[in-house]
Length: 251
Image 1 (cartoon, rainbow, N blue to C red):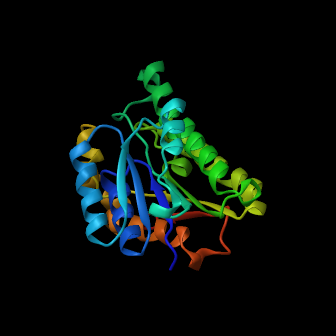
Image 2 (image 1 turned 90 degrees about the vertical axis):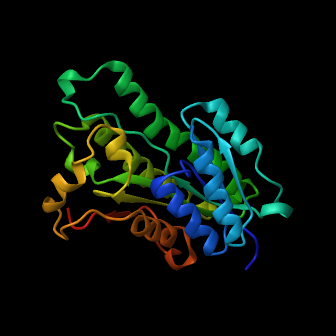
């Protein structure tokens, strides 16, 4: 298979790291972004290289247009890593659980900036590179969304749920907009996932507390999330665009 490049934002931990590693095993070269954990990013890069891929990591805040532009301006030469053929819009944040009545504007803005503005900026620049009408080779964009977009996350993360609902709207509209340019756009709506994000947000017991509400009776794994994302990136999903794939155990 010819060399090809995928960008995975937020690729140093959790679902992003698992996705980067799986893409490398499936023959993709990988450029991942990270916000602060350089050591974790280096570890993911090393694992991708060990799988036979070209891999690199770039520190970037996806909500910052200048940093997103710098990321794409600094893409490796096609002779080195192949043409950009995929973007996994995984970078995202969620603040500690709160009722809306107790949320500050700064929290809300940051949640929307990273999850919505960041998704749009990275997708915008990926389309500029991949669109066949602009000289690109086509490709796929997968936006990592959440079942929170449907469930609303009352008493926890209504701002995050609103942001992910916006990501779903971006997926629907952009899929139609760029279909003629050889780009497929889909989202994966993740449910309760076994990642460190719960402990980082002050709720280390959240998995145990909510697992009984999941029809399958457990949280999902990052590997299960990565499998869905990588399927949508790959050619087996060549007739799938504008879809929202729920990976949530039935919840």
